[in-house]
Amino acid sequence: MGVTLQPAEAYQRAAALLGETITELADTEWDLTDGDDGWSVAQTVAWVVVGDSQINAALDRGRLDEVGEVDASVLGPNLVSTWRGTAVGAIASLTAPDAINQTVEHPQGLLSVRNLVGQRVTENLVRTWDIGRVTGRDIEIPDELAEWCLEFWASHADAVMDGGVLADSPLEPPENADAAARLLAFTGRRP
Image (cartoon, rainbow, N blue to C red; front, side, top):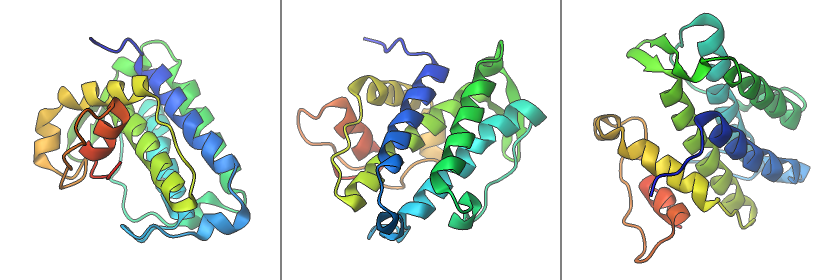
């Protein structure tokens, strides 16, 4: 059974989940660190913001550059406002006619905006879950969005096998796992 969400809608919903999570953070929670990758919550949000800004770059310039190291300072003094501006800009870019069907230049070859959005939806969902784990919040990834991501990655087996896009070591999901738990396991997270 396929998921009927359109890519722009999936991105908007995934970004909204991240936004709902980070707007509730206390000032002291932005510095909490993930024991797995050593990133603070602010660094995690910065990673998402820089990645999501590529949607605008792709549609404005027709090309993308490699993303190097990301520093939380890119968020400036108002971290939530910076995230919000980036997400709103990406959503607006994706509403342009035929935006999702464009192909852009990338240092590793051509990349469709549709594929970029699939990556960004996944990143928003799993990073929101990461932030929830670090801050002690129970994040519910909607099954429909998790299924959408799993279907997206199932059609990109070559990218998964080449590595560098997802976790090097996907985990085995628990028996009878729901879509969210399968997505988390697929991205190397223990649900």
